[in-house]
Image 1 (spheres, rainbow, N blue to C red):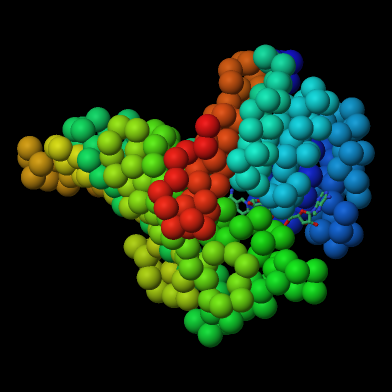
Image 2 (cartoon, rainbow, N blue to C red):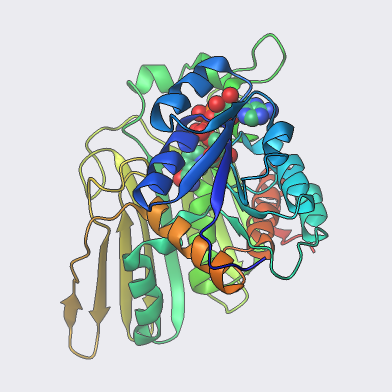
Length: 357
Ligand SMILES: NC(=O)c1ccc[n+]([C@@H]2O[C@H](COP(=O)([O-])OP(=O)(O)OC[C@H]3O[C@@H](n4cnc5c(N)ncnc54)[C@H](O)[C@@H]3O)[C@@H](O)[C@H]2O)c1
C-alpha cells in the first residue's frame, strides 16, 4: 500500500488528544476526512476544527469510509485493541495512541496481529520524535558504559491543589464500581505519564529483566497515584523510576509543575534530558545536556520549540510513502504493556517480577 499520495486520516475519538492530533495533522498539511465519536459534543468540537470532515457516531462506519487510508485511534485505552485489530483487518495504515493494550494478555494478542508487509502501524509514544531525544540517543555512547539511570515523571500543574488530588472523586470508584481515572486510563500514573518514560527507557537502554515496583494512592482510590520502580536492565544498568501525580505548580526545570527527566550515568560521563508538559510542547524547548568527565565540561545544545505530534505524524507518513516499518512498532509497544503488567504484579506480591514472556 505504499504510495506517493499522502495518507488521508480518519480520527476515532475526538477528545483531548484527538483535538491535539487534529491540529498537528492540519499543521503538517494532511487531510482529515472523517472523525468518529459517540458523543455529539465531542463531534461538534471536532467539526469546528475540521469543517469538511465527515462525522460518524460509530467508529465502524469510519472504517468503511473509502477516502480514509490511515486510521488514527484516539479513544480511551480499553478500546484501543479492538479498534486497532479492526483497523489492521481493514487494510489501512494505523496510528494508535498509547498504551496499545491494557494488560499483558492483550499485548500477547496484539503481537499475533498480522498487518500486511506494506501496512504501516505506529503506536503513539511521541517523545522519541523530539530532536533532543534523538540527540540524546546519538550521544549516548559518549558516556561510556551506562551504569545507572534515574527516570522521573512528576506530573504537576494540572490539578488544583493538594487537598483536591488527595481527595478526588475522579480516582474513587463511582456507582459502576470503577473510577473515572481507571475507566479512562485502565490504570493510574504508570499508564499515563509513566508509559511514555518506560518507552524512552527502552529506546535508550533496552529491556528490563527484573522489575521491582511499589505503588501508592490515598485510601479508596482504585488507580495508583504514585509508582516507584527499580528495574534491572538486560545490560546490567539499574534504573530508578518514579511516575507520580503531584500537587505542585512551580516545580520542574520549566517552573510549571511538570517535572519529567531522564538522567543516565556512565563510566565516562552523564547525559540528561528534561521534557516540557505534553500538551504544550511548543511553549518550551526540550533541554538536554551532556557531561564529559575527560574534559570536565558540560555541553548544552539549544533545541527549537517543536510540535512533537506533528513530527510523529510526518514520520508515520514517510513510512506510508516508503513502505518502511514504523516505530514505535506493535512489538515495542507490547514491551511497555508487559513492563507495566510486571510493575503491577510486583506491587501486588511485593516481590521482584520478571518481564512476562
Ligand atoms: N501521547 C500523549 O501524550 C497522550 C496524551 C494524552 C492522552 N493520550 C492517550 O490518548 C487516548 C485518549 O485520551 P484523551 O485524553 O484524549 O481522552 P478523552 O476522554 O479526552 O477522549 C477520548 C475520546 O474517545 C471517545 N470515545 C469513547 N468511546 C468511543 C467509541 N466507542 N468510539 C469512538 N470514540 C469514543 C470519547 O467520547 C472521547 O471524546 C488515551 O489512550 C490516552 O492514553 C496520549
